[in-house]
Image 1 (cartoon, helix red, strand yellow):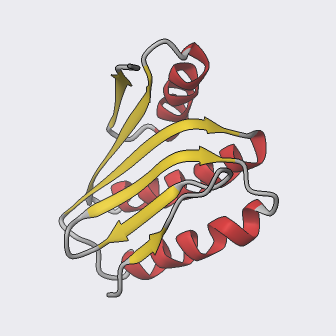
Image 2 (cartoon, rainbow, N blue to C red):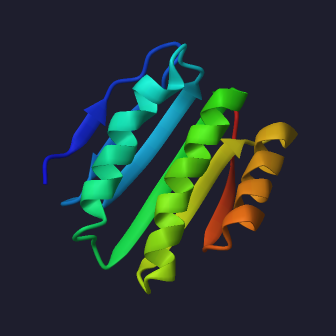
Image 3 (cartoon, one colour):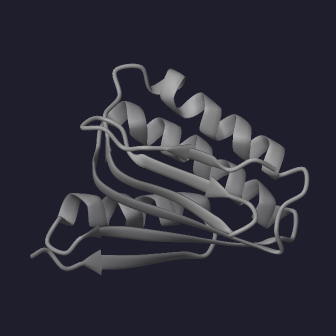
Length: 127
């Protein structure tokens, strides 16, 4: 399965989905003008991945900021991992957020409660 790699911009996150290395990463800022256009390829890639997933799937979400429209798409992505979990697969979400950013910390906590899958929150030190 071909990896999906999208470089970050000022309004879109870095995306790296790689079945071989087991890396599933979104990192940076997410406020694209057309969230469906940006996130559709990610959701499609995960749909294909779900037909033959790794024994462990770890999704790292490392946002500095995301808007409300992006949060809906993040929820759709998390639902794919929840579906794998319900099918008996090992999944984990690593939620990284800037150390003093209570909004992003609380967003991670809310996603964790909504999903009911293994979820770990990690504060990042800000220089």
